[in-house]
Image 1: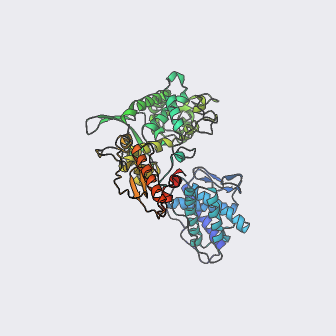
Image 2: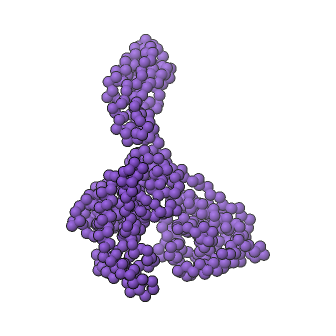
Image 3: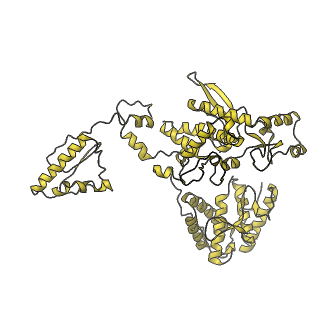
Length: 536
């Protein structure tokens, strides 16, 4: 498809160039035949063109962008869409909102032709105050792209250099404390909620409502193998698969379509989780039984025309191949306010599932079964936390990066870093205490189990002519009386009698030398001084 975005008329002034750019965008917009009009301020599937508030990062619920700046923003969105279509334009529209906000602050109007470096700098600084580091990086990348378009198209009256992104791409944290991981904002914050869902799933069918059966069964499948919620909800009815591995052992898996470019995939289920997966699949099949009967009737009648779709009230965007979906449902089947429409068909979506485990729903599945936290608020969990948890356990279990990426349905192996919450310090702690006789097939979990059994006394065969030694669990460090005790001394396990006796002997030696007038020995005779940093 040809477009005029790359053509710049040097004979026109900046305002005419801007108008020409917007006009070209409108023409391309018409060719794409989007399900909305250019004049609308809400483009479903793209974004909403609302202004930014002064006090926070949320778009103003009452006001939309300035009309001229809104047309410019729409043209930028269309420009981005034809060059590199994306599923989300969140960072781009956030950059445009910040740019409009900055223009109003610096120039008292949202005129694109008045933009300069100060306007971009103010937008960037505002982003740093409002958003987290990863989001700031994405917004600043889009600010730079907008700057390049403005420079290339000549929208300004004066000389202007392109604004450059000042934020480096954040590298994954090498260490996250356990407290940080299980905090409300941590990637593994929902451990109690996962245990609660397991308890709900274990109840008899007669004690659970249809919505309870659906929510607990879907989450159980998320815990069987690292999957995305959309992948589970789009499972076909005949998703189960059994096959022999290279050792002749029968393995159980689920056929699904992994997102983000991975494609068709088989999720092999760990042996211990196979009964859970089978029970969850059985419950979901039972829930969709009536809907599938209606679907078979429609298939037999060669459902094709739109009048049939209206007659049977099929959800918008429903495809004929979805008749075989495992999570096929009738409309309003879980609604407490409306009766189930048994002459309609739909496939469960992620929004409704997440709503039943969300903190924003006061009557979520945890509240219905009376699972509350210390503040008497119902528990909640994110569907993606199961994926983070299983990837972390896989690392602890000794799986390779390639196997984890393949099991997770991840096309890029480097993305494993975002799901691995085993810190380097944590892994190094195990490596430093590898016991003798450990095979190469043993994992970090095996090291942890064998750690206490295989600890040996450190080699402390040193010349004890003075007391300036710092002993530790795995060795010692020799100093001199002229030096003060090391400020980074880690200490040792005081329950170890061997080390404790050695330490007491060194203190006595230092005290004896101090009494004899040896310079600096008094510091090494002071046990409190030696352990000062350690205690802090």
